[in-house]
Length: 479
Ligand SMILES: [Zn+2]
Image (tube, rainbow, N blue to C red; front, top):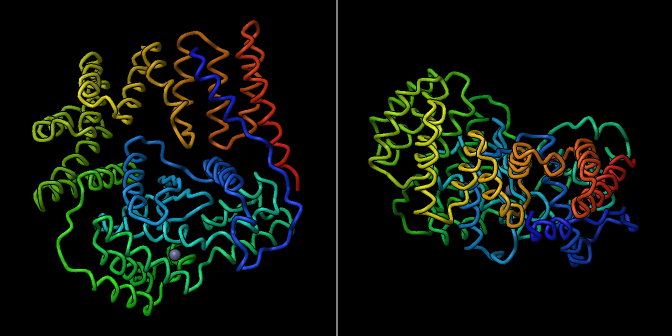
């Protein structure tokens, strides 16, 4: 075990959060940093993100994660908050929703991505959320959460932002009151919405997305509830859309010269993959992909073929899937999604060596491709190449921010395969901690400590992590 890894884990140890001594709500005019220090907000954001894993299914698909991060990153780079850290992620939920949590954690539901008809529409939602963060519209809500112990504050914010009724929140009238006060401040006012639209349109245009996408998407959301009698999307509950607001953003967007903005291939592929992952009827979906393959421009056709290949694989029609992917790889030999999909088909077909060398060759051409590395590591684990998987995964622990549960889970599997039980449980503990499951984290860390007898460094790490997990668990249970 390299020493660097140990140091990073020790360094990342959190100091338990305490309940704030001043329960006063801040004045609107108060400088926000006196309300919540950046370090405190960062800690709240991390706890919020961990907690969220307990309440919703956050996509651990490296390709989906990579796409939403790149899209968010592109927008941030063209905003006033380019120096702040943000983290974008996808929640696997059919509800049309997107939300900004503390410390720049921005979540977007798969349902919202699938409801967009262009990449600009998806970008406009992210730009709008970024604008709420940049304009500090959420500071008061987060400050209200400061009255609670950290794990509870994180859980409360998560429940409110998701629009979910958390049973945990219903238990105490005190918490309900707090939640109400925070909820009130997360339902943005009209002026907040307008401001977020204005700033968002600036960000869109600067990032080379169509500023008209914003009024177009919001208009469609509003119409879908008005004419189709559907439930109001969660997004509209917290971000009220009025006709006046749409007209205002439309007028603003129209000041930019009109031109075409083609969707990126990555956007179309992400949508196709999400369609397959969330499909209730794969046969119907295949028909729809088959129709789309005959229409549109090249990227749209390629995305439809890719969706069809994934659906075929999901239905175990491996030869048909392989044929589809062969054609795609002829045309786009370097497209990582196609390389991965083909390798996955080969693995199921038992062509292990072919699949593994496909990843190796791709990584030789693109040594910095983090997504391919993770996917290759997973393939190595499945084919029992534990040592190589471990070597590939370990650098992720030091570099990934925020901590993605999947990396710890894979590392735990690698160590289990190598017969190193203590290490395996230690990483399993980190997996559960990153997923917000403190009880399992405590159980696994205790096991790691017990099994680490003789390995003093590992024993010390397990002991210290146990202390952190227990302190947080205690704070969570304080009511
Ligand atoms: Zn809004």
